[in-house]
Each structure stands twice: as structure tokens, then as C-alpha cells.
Length: 133
Image (cartoon, one colour):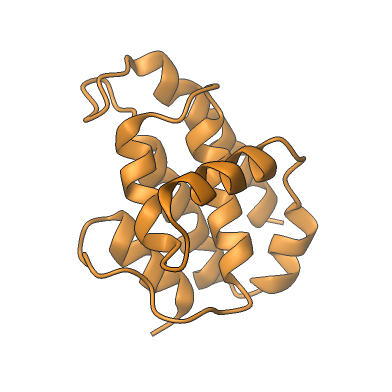
């Protein structure tokens, strides 16, 4: 199973166990989720809960610090494209970001309104355009 699929299984709710071990792709995959989650300027409790299993070695405070650091930096699309050259992996990247943005749905679990999701979906649209290259 690909690492992207492992992330998808957690984010889409098909797996409840945290990730095992570390993979070279983890930082990029986590960055996709971090940038999607905070694109609207907030990290909602449901987004926080969804991200925690993707950081099996970090406690909640360390995850918060990592998210603040990563989300404050420009997203590295070039590194993402280099790490995931296959079309099927790029499709999974878009699914991953979309699943995170769905947490902010019109009646999302975090109680945010649809404006938060709209901003996050704008990030997903940019990601979709970049991986289509």
C-alpha cells in the first residue's frame, strides 16, 4: 500500500490506527494537510483531531507547533511534484486535500460555516491545477 493511501485511509475514516514508522513522503503529505486545514486562517478542533494520528511520535502541543511553522511557510509545489510524479498519486493528493477541506463543510463537525470550506477548497483547486501539469 502506498503511503498516500495510508494517509487517505486515516483522513477518510477507513483507518483509526495512527501511522506506523516514518516515510520520506510524510513531511510533504502532512504539509498538504496542514496548508489545507489552515487555509481559512483557523485550525478547528475536528481538523486537529484528524491530524493527530498522522504524527504518531508527537503529542498535541508538538503537532500544534509543527502546524504553525509549516503553515506559515510557502507551500513547496515543486517538491511535491518531484516526490509524486505518477498521475494516480497526484489524484490521491487532491483527494487527501479535499478530504481535509470537507471537515469544514457547511455543517462540518467543527461547527465552522461554509466560508471556511470555500477558502480551503481554493487551496485544493490550486493544488489540483499544479498536479495536473
